[in-house]
Length: 147
Image 1 (tube, rainbow, N blue to C red):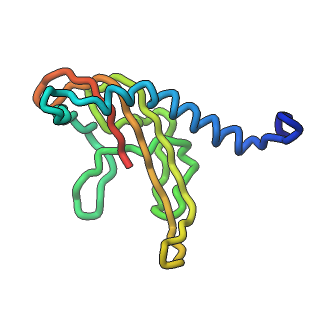
Image 2: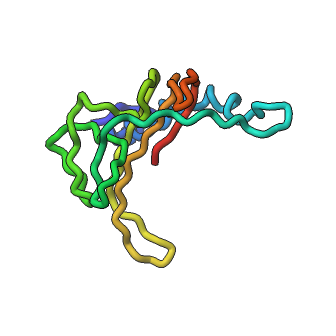
């Protein structure tokens, strides 16, 4: 049962879909003027020093480490990679020495390519905004995305 508005019912799915979109716009919208303005008189954007990755993460078959943990209910297994989520008390950001806000979303489904073929789709998307200590030791403020 949905709430009534102008004689039409709004489904719970639509409420969450548009609520999440509005929340993202409210979070990122105020940052856009600062992100699109030139940082120097030359008009070139200022490149921030790199943040330090979190220690540990997912071990890949070639022996390298992907510095990311998949937070979420441990009874959930992502359908295509078979990755099991590691709990609700797992670090969602991929930056260490970081203080800020992290948003996380997993998507799973299928997509149709321009060639008409169906493809499995599974994403782990994260956005982080806050302060961090860079690899050079300086304290910085940044906005990052992991897709």
